[in-house]
Amino acid sequence: MADVAVIGTGVMGSAVARACVGAGLSVAAWNRTPERGVALAPQGVDWCATVDEAVRSSPVVVLALLNYAISRQVLEPAGPGLAGRIVVQTASGVPDQVEPLATWVADAGGRYLEAAILNYPQTVGTEQCFTVYAGPAEWYGEISPLTRALGGTALYLGEDAPYAKAYHSVSAAFYYGIVNTLLECSALATSLGVPLDDFARSVPLYQPGLQHTIDVGVELMGRGDYRYEQAPLTTHIDILRNLSAVAEESGVAGSFLPVLRDRVQRALDDGFRREHVAVLHQQFRATPARRTEGRGEPTRLTP
Image (tube, rainbow, N blue to C red; front, side):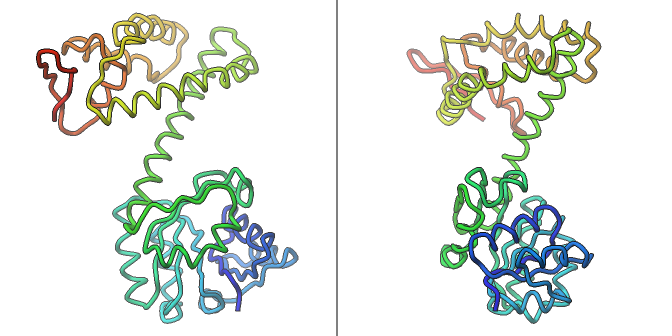
């Protein structure tokens, strides 16, 4: 019997299979297009002709498929074979999709763990890999050979399986926010005649300041106290006005800068002047906040 079965051997699934083999685990695999799976055979992966064969070949089944609908569709023929096995789901999706699949796996006698690989396939099996998991702690403990094989940092988030997907959603949204910023700033750099290599070399220099902004912002958001003398909102508005004008004059389409400028202006209009930029997070909430003041008390926002 194999130590791990990988269902889906696309780029990520293949990386998982290779990392497990590299860590000394025996691996079985199945893919809807056999060519991809067969290509792994010379690397020590046992190819299975059917998904049922793959599922029954190992006590730990890793789903490395595109989404939850495909995962359910692929597993249907192997339903009875899931009994007693741990299913580790890594597909892309949203928190509400976790429970239906977890329930279906449980009804088939399987044990479900939600997981996410928060990095590119080439990091799997290296110190740069970052994975998160949620579900019963006992089951998570049973897959320790897998988590070690994937390398890097494995973060257990607790018993609530959907929470892993919520965590992943927030992390992925942050990543795509950075991607959007990269693309827009690259367009701006090109318009202003700044070589992209020069722009790229400057980015690491900002990382300490960015991390400081994150650390301070998270602390202030947690406290609901946003007063901050180092760089209050009044210091941001003129900079954002200038940057918005430069972006417009440079022909950058759909810039985020005017949006952020308007958010800062709205906060200023609401009376927030000496607060940290983190106060803007309240504008993203479904329930708007209001400013409250007490004599000698920190400025706080209440929903």
